Length: 177
Image (tube, rainbow, N blue to C red; front, side):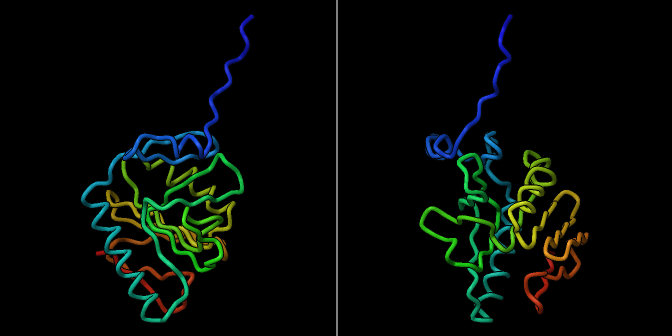
C-alpha cells in the first residue's frame, strides 16, 4: 500500500531562494507566483500611493506607506510571506530592513486576474486573523472597491467614482477616478 503523498510545505527561505526577478507570496506554506502588474494596476497603485502619502505628510503623520514589493510577515511563523500592493504601518516598531513584522494598519490589494481568488478569499481571512485594521480590495474590472473595517466589523462596497472614507483616519477619503 502506498503512503499518502504529503503536499510540499514551503517556507520563507524558499521565497528568498527564488531566482532574481521572480516574485511570489507564501500563504500557509503554499507558494503563489506573481505575474508582473498591468499598466492599469500600476496607475491605480501609483495614484493611491501618492494620495495617501500626501495626506500623511499634510498631517505630519507618523504612519509610513509602502508599495509592493514590500515584505509583510503577518504571523510569527515561516510559512506566511505576503507582498500587499499597498501597506500603511503606524506602529513603526514593526518595521525593519526586511519589511513589516506583524499586521499593517491598512492594506490595499489591487485585483488582477491571477490574484482574484487570493485577494477575495485567502488574504481576506489572513488579514482579518492577523488584526489588520482595514483592508481594501480594489477591482479594476468591476470598477469597485470593497472596504473591510475589521475593527468595527463592517463591509462596504464603493464604485471608483465614489469618495471612499478611510476608516483608520477620521477626515480622509479617496476617489479612485
